[in-house]
Every structure is written in C-alpha cells, then in structure tokens.
Length: 171
Image (cartoon, rainbow, N blue to C red; front, top):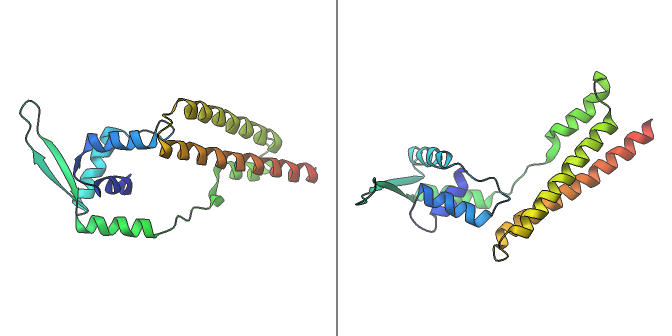
C-alpha cells in the first residue's frame, strides 16, 4: 500500500480518508478495500521515512485533520517504482506445493486436488463476472483489474488441465 499512496499524493495533498476513498473509487469492488486504519498506519510510516510530510489543518466543527504531501524523496521513490518492472513468477505457488507433496503423504489425491482447485477458480470467475456487471461502466481501471484477474484465472485453469493430463499419463 506504500507506493499506491505515494502515487495518489503525487497529484496533490490529501488526508488519509480521502486517499482511502480515492483508492476504492479508482479500483472498484474487485480489489480488496483498504482498511482506514491500515491507510493511516502506512501514512505514519511514510512520514517517518521522509517520503511524505503531514500538516495539521484546523477544522471549525470537527477535530483537526492531517493533510499529507509528497516530499522530493517520495517523488524519487515513486519514480523508481514506476521504472522497475514487476518480477513475480508464480514459482512459489501454494497449490503446486500441495500437488507435488500429496503423493508422498498419502493424505490427498492429486486429481482430487486439481478438481477442487478448478472448482475454486470457476467460482471466483463467476464472482468476478458479477462484480464486472455491477461495476460502473465508466470505471475503466476497475474493469481492467477484473479482466486481468479473469485472464489469470483462465491461464490457471489451462495449467490445471495440463497438470491433470500429465498426471493421468503417469498412472
């Protein structure tokens, strides 16, 4: 959450609750909604590390609020984040570990594991389809997020099919 908050602050000063709302609005309902407490804890850490600065703003009928703005160091960290490609191959996949270790334990059948995982992916795809239908059509970012998740799920389903074919050949 650190760098997305920095990215939102790059457009101008904001307070924590405003940043939370901006994230929710931009990413839509498919993305896990940030907890406001998590947002404020992260803002505190960013401030301690010198990436943002906060300023108390008085409000007449409410408690003071803290408005944050990006520092030069924060802008530099953000530039570095955008420059760096993401390298997260799914080599350390929890399901694959179950699949690989099941025969050694005698506690689970590999094909049953594949079928259970397939059902989970299909249920998730149905949920994402419902979210996409309910999402505001003008929120292209949210729709792209849902589409990306569904494409990843389809690739995972294809991979499960491949695993099942390989394992059935071994029997």
